[in-house]
Length: 272
Length: 311
Image 1 (cartoon, each protein chain N blue to C red):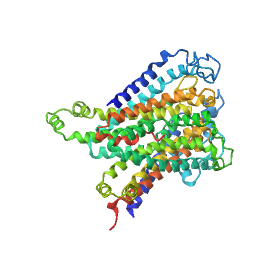
Image 2 (spheres, chains in turn purple, cyan):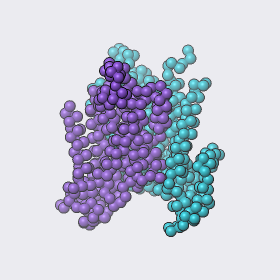
Image 3 (cartoon, each protein chain N blue to C red):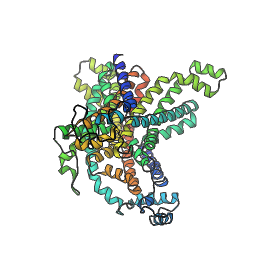
Image 4 (cartoon, rainbow over the protein chains, first blue to last red):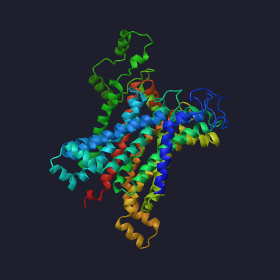
């Protein structure tokens, strides 16, 4: 219980910093303000990078875009998987078989390779969304499908059918509330994978363009000066690592007592 | 016999489907090599002429059949950027990447079994072991790579931060260049795989024969080797196959970050320069290896399933 609270507080702190940190930055994150590669010192908490930009300011403002793209991608993957899972679980039969075959096909491809192939024609953020949906929605679909099949023949759903309620009403009022926890936990895992894909594309140069601050891009930009100012690499690495770890741990601890949750743990990674 | 062929047929069908996806993503969408190659300010007329010269103006289905027929003959086309045969570039870089993936898998596989066994056996108490693997596996590959470089190269100065391999030399002759790339690939893979293995271990140790063997007081190592390991063969092969797919994808990040000249960095630079034949060839090679791995793991699962035995 205490662990769960800790993980949630850590997650909230990281997300709030990423979303709002830009306003608290002491300097403009794209302006050179001091000599390059200064170590940590007064005025510049985490020193400066190759162009003399303030690392602390860049860390504070470097997570907003990354997380916005990742959240969009995770929501899209979760919504697609939810719709597919409801259809497969509720309809059964041919629809179920077709959707299951499609998920098997999509799961065979590593998401990062998909993202790279998509990046040839699409801008980086769109490639992140495409790869997260193709790699993540099938997993959501499986989880939701199983959950729907489990509640389909329970008394309260049968009662709703006998009352003559429409399929949409049953799905919204009877089935979805029953698996709220499952869907939320799965959304958390989609978000972890989305951050992994987005950071990979940014490092490879298909995402946020320089000179914009971005945690993943900073890793690559500052690698050359790691001996002079280790914080320029360590700080963005910590920010990225804390974000995904706090997310995954929150999901892990929240689903601790839920026996169904073990099935979905299989894929906390994007095949990265 | 028919049973044994099933994974093979499934793999071949999936590979055909993958070829359609790769082709559609690279050839039909905008981002055209002809537009990329013409000098700035070229007229539409000139772009069209170049497209014709590059053979990119035929009907899409025609381009697809030509391309797959070429793949089956071993003809991967020529690079749009330097006009060299794609096969040469792929063969030149294949040993470097194969070494990287092989070493990473060799390092990660035993770690998976040990960590997975530990976490799986401790699952009754939950908490620490599972949380460690879950949290660790969630760390993005770029962070692991950057962290390893910062520590081993930046702070401790043990290995070079850039793994530039002289052209034509095999990476085995420069082991110091392999340390950072292999570590950056093996560490996340080991944690990820251990998480998967721990589930199978937890299921196996709660089986009656294992519980019984422990109650009889047989030593732990003998129970682990005789009663637990055989049950892990099928799931572990599956984990290895999935991990190999993940490692192939990870080469793009790791090779680019460390400047290691393999297929992963070739794919990244080809995507950046819209060199579609190279992207298609490397993506298909990766898909073929991933699907072959999954087919092998399916065959092992079929072969070790007690229900499939003939007696």
